Length: 151
Image 1 (cartoon, rainbow, N blue to C red):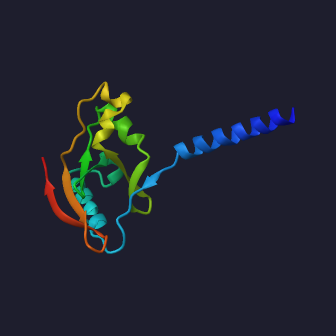
Image 2 (cartoon, one colour):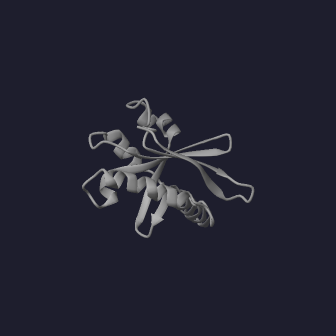
Image 3 (cartoon, rainbow, N blue to C red):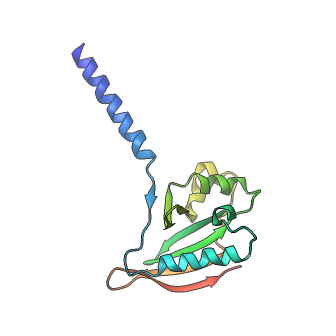
């Protein structure tokens, strides 16, 4: 009986640790001396200028990310109100970039489209918007190499 109780307690602890790990959020940072966060803020302001809303949270923005050949491509993008699949994908993202206290931008990867949940109803993820190309310099600091509006 004691062995069964110990096994039961161990199983409950193990399951609880998996459940807790599943809900963790991942924050992406670029380090001191990086100009990436300021550039992302410029992208947010680009969208903010085109809308009457002064609250950036109402604009349905996200940051799309893609990594290739040592470069990281970021796109500050917006999804349409009617795009329920993107709303779900962005809303369920556990990855974010902290813009300021109280404002976290969700991050999705363009490969998220391969998810069974999303792939059945969607063929692509919007990569248009305020494009930012970054790369680590010799000191290991992420630096912006290029920005471009891609509409």
